[in-house]
Image (cartoon, rainbow, N blue to C red; front, side, top):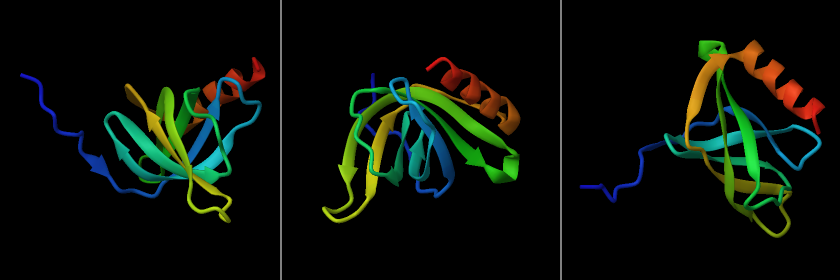
Amino acid sequence: MRSNRLPRHYDVQLPVVFGTAAGDEWRNGLTVSVSLTGAVIEADRFEATGEEIVLAIALPEARGCLYGAGRIVATQPLSSAASTTRITIAVPFYRLEPRATVMARMRALHQGC
């Protein structure tokens, strides 16, 4: 039997670096919450619902990152005057990796753009 319960989420504010397959630059943001199936982040103005995304959530105490790839489910400006957007991302899985490994992988991804 399948549960209808939502995955447990954690309200954490951690630095995140992300980019889309169509983008030409990495962006910085801050997590709002993280769960086993995704994340909600806030960043400067951003609109790209439905696009594939790669993200790395910094874990300062672990000297590593949660690295994942997924799809943007929704974007929502926080207010009409605000320059900040809340981005909801579906992430099928994360990997915990050393920060240097993640940053090297992300640099290599953008060299192909």
